Length: 282
Ligand SMILES: CC(C)(COP(=O)(O)OP(=O)(O)OC[C@H]1O[C@@H](n2cnc3c(N)ncnc32)[C@H](O)[C@@H]1OP(=O)(O)O)[C@@H](O)C(=O)NCCC(=O)NCCS
Image (cartoon, rainbow, N blue to C red; front, side):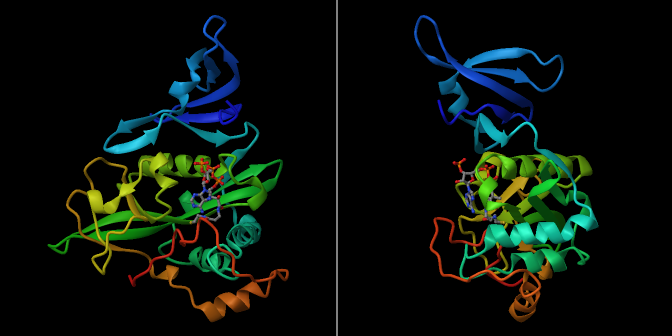
């Protein structure tokens, strides 16, 4: 039951729980999870571990029943301008040598925050005792249908967690939290280029199964979408992302020199697709 760790978990319907510990049924020895609701009166519940790990079909997507969203003492808050440099540095650490030698995502983040497409209300950090561990940012995007009608959508990325803190649910918590907020703000759909193994747990589906295509007519697996308002993408159309994603590599290299030296290496990882990178023009 090592994969069901104590800490904060999100049920696929959106409510948060704290796993207190795991235990065994006294008669059958079946593994059980003992957990507490992080809402209402905070009732304590028990559920078979097998059910905890299941995936469930919900609004056309296959979702994990529960997703780990981190240690209890990690908090989320809006990013302040005084946090910008630290978030650029953590983005550099997270992406360094990930998709090729070095990276330019920290420069992208730097210029994005000055861009009209940037959405400051959805710029969030995760922190623990004043140390910033993760960051997510969003920009405005659009889907234009065959009749020339545009649907305003949003796109996130880069999303980054410091390497030594990855795999502890921080990314999931940042994503869930900002998706909830985006829905409250009235945004209708989110379109991303992301890893097809990671993002379905948040409800993202391959765009090819129901929605828009890129300007080149492509519908590849990492091209994914989430309807915040059900049915909002059914008309299809062409996805247009903010031009700020097309960074100038020379300017990115000059910006990188303002950070401490890091060695560039070619490193193959299982995540060798740039998740937020767009392979075709806007
Ligand atoms: C992707 C990232 C933000 C996720 O944050 P995190 O706190 O590590 O993620 P969580 O703990 O919520 O989830 C961990 C899961 O993410 C998966 N994961 C981590 N990085 C991933 C990546 N780049 N692509 C696909 N999956 C990834 C892990 O395998 C793990 O999967 P599992 O739950 O099935 O075991 C973080 O790992 C990161 O900064 N990676 C490097 C930069 C990057 O690739 N960013 C995304 C591109 S915009």
